[in-house]
Length: 89
Image 1 (cartoon, rainbow, N blue to C red):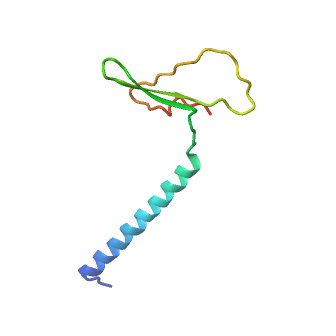
Image 2 (image 1 turned 45 degrees about the vertical axis):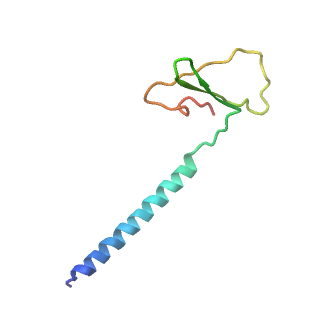
Image 3 (image 1 turned 120 degrees about the horizontal axis):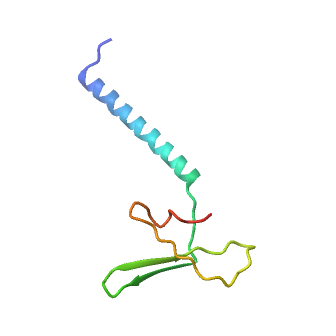
C-alpha cells in the first residue's frame, strides 16, 4: 500500500495532534492529582532600602491547633528552590 505525500502529511499531522492531546491530558491529570493548594494568611512584599524586594508569607495555623505564643520561624530558600519548597502540609 503506497501513500501519496499529502496522505503522509495528513497522517503525521493527525499523529502529532493525538500525541499532543494525550500529553496534555496526562499532565492535566497529574497536576490536578498532585497539586497542593495552599493559601497564605499573610502575604507581604517589603521594599528594602537598597531596592531589593522581599516577600513574606505566613502559613495559616491548621484548624484545631491551639495558638501558642511562640516566636515566628523564618525559612529562607536557596537559589534552586521557590517559596513552595518549604511549605508544611
